Amino acid sequence: MSYKHKQGKERDDFAQFLEWTYIQRKKKKLSQLILVTSQKRKQNKPSRRSQTNHYVFSVNNIQYEVCKRFFLDTLAVSEAQILTALKSRSATDITSPDKRGKHAKRVNAIPRIVIEDIKAHIESFPRVESHYCRASTSKEYLEGSLNLHKMYDISVEKCNSNNVVPAKLSAYKNIFNTEYNISFNKPKKDLCDYCAEYNNMTETEKQVQAKAFERHMQNKEKSRNEKLQDKTLSEIINSHVTAVFDLQQVLLLPKANQSSLYYCRKLNNYNMTIYSLGDKKGFSYLWNEVIAKRGSNEIASCLLQFFQTMHHNKVYSITLYSDNCAGQNRNRYIVALYWYSIQKFGFESIVHKFLEKGHTQNENDSMHSAIESSIKNVDVYTTSQYAVLIRSARRKDPYTVCEMGPEDFFDFKDFSKSIKNLDKDSTGKKIAWREMRVVRFESHFPNTCAIQYDYEGEYHFVHLQPKQLRRPFK
Image (cartoon, rainbow, N blue to C red; front, side, top):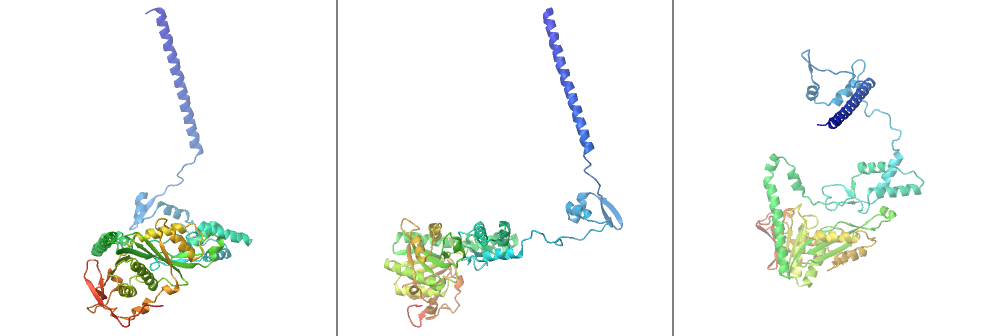
């Protein structure tokens, strides 16, 4: 190795040594700085624990000190309850009484006159009861185009016009939600109550209700299979019609976005729809509450209009499906209609099958959905306008709309009194109207009504005899 090379190597080693020394000094200063800072923080910050709590149980005048977790779990209390009791104790170790609800009233509490004004404004909007759920709930429903913010804005406009300071939205919302049983959403019962109840039962309760639930599910499948078979038959045979019918939710008049109209009393309009499954034709029978109500007489009268149309279309057999509403379509008055129609129009058969309760969803719901979409953003002031909108709800093959007048409704309740043996079957047993699954009339035996209480059960025959054959009237 040459002298120059050796001298250069020593220079590199010395440079590395200087760099290492500089780094070590820098680290030492940094550690000293951190140590001094931490010492200052310890001097300025007080101790987190100002006192020490001891947890003691006294058993037979002997005190046993335990840990905090054992103490809390034994008494089934939280640590916050213990700390609150310690903070509220007096010098004599007696806890002060509870002061909740004993404070003076808040200065910013809502005045009584403001609360009364808010209630008066909410009550000024007309409400309707539920169509499907009125037997199981007392909730009322406001018009679908309304919402809570829109109601509040209308209230603010009214207060400004009267030079009154409006209440806050939070106060309006609180009174609406706590003082009234009102909703904006349309009532729906897509979920079966019995199925939901069964799913929430305990295992013991499920074992007790197992057979009833199994029968419920079997009836659901049987009714749907029956409807599918009848639908296929109506697609093959033109002279056979399978249809589902139901009453749509109440249509209100006037229907507009003008704030002044929200306070007006609404005119209820009823729309009975029938949907033919074979040719997919829809029929709508429309009227308002001035003309008639929405009971069994009205449903039977609409079905009579439908039977007349089918008779003109050379239909010879009809199968109907519906829900289980006893006040509208599962009663003796509907049976009186079928007995009258089988003789009046000469049908070969009229069969009415009831879908299983809680599982009555069917193709007729699509017709209701199309009608609701057609009238959603349109101002309507008369029943005739509803008829135009319903007719145009489907562009291809529009629905057939019939505006019912007073002369189109008949008193089938009075007509049923002219029929003998309408209460008991051929064996003398009383007819269970609310348990019927199938009602059948055949042209070969026009005075005999066959009733099934189960889709695969035996028939119970009712031999009807007229006291005085007459046309139903109103």
